[in-house]
Length: 395
Image (cartoon, rainbow, N blue to C red; front, side, top):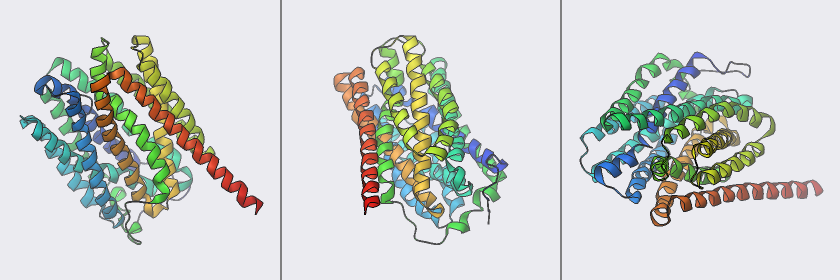
């Protein structure tokens, strides 16, 4: 059994290897996510709704897979969930090469969602079980940088490959990223799978009502994020921006810089500072993006987006893990990722329909309303909580 005391180092060898594994997993996702809608439009002449549907089917299947994965992880079946999920993800990603119809692409997106859902639940669950609880925000902030780095590298590589080569190169890169995970995990198998017996007791759960508030907030956030990622390349072409890939450089670099800061801020001050400031920065980013920006405004929009996403993701994930007990970390991570994927799928489909009917500028205006709702819900919850505290002190 692996035991980590309160003074243990965060950045040990096992943590670093799992960081790289999660980076490669999300690298695969980020190579495909922003480029597939463009590929579907150019090759199959798909409309905006179908392009968004390819993201939605992936998200729905990932959510379903996580429900079962969380239960299996709490029963100690970490290796089974991880390697089965990786196998499914590799085969379904490679399958894009042979796809000749839109139906087959949707089928593969659904299958990939199952594998991705299993693996993406496993890595943060392993890490959260071995981090000192009092440094959970800082530790998950560092671990979350793996997704930020992937978001920085993946879309830039994918969009560059689409400009210069065929989509086959993106498929090869995405498959290679997943295959590299196998030897990395096996090199730290004692770290990765040594926690299975520690969480075997207690009923396995996939839902906890204590996590509903952060889950709803994350859903609103990722609805916005989903449409931004899915349609950024298409929107850039529409407003004639020559270097749309710059958004995927400046935003993630900013995100990498702020995530550890907000992780430490969460450990010291709680969730309010990160959620309020992050929502404000997201609205600033969307406002700049929705007004047909030139390159200067586009870069500032990317920077504001990076601050907002870095603050909000690191804060919400640490908040959800802190709410539950350590043995329930799989439930927290599953609900975090399910809210994330459901939001991306819901946002891509719903806001994609808005874009198809009213244009991308209107779509981004609706996104601002989503973030305003995010802020209103959280501030209302603070007001209610403080009212209850005052009433209890008066009794």
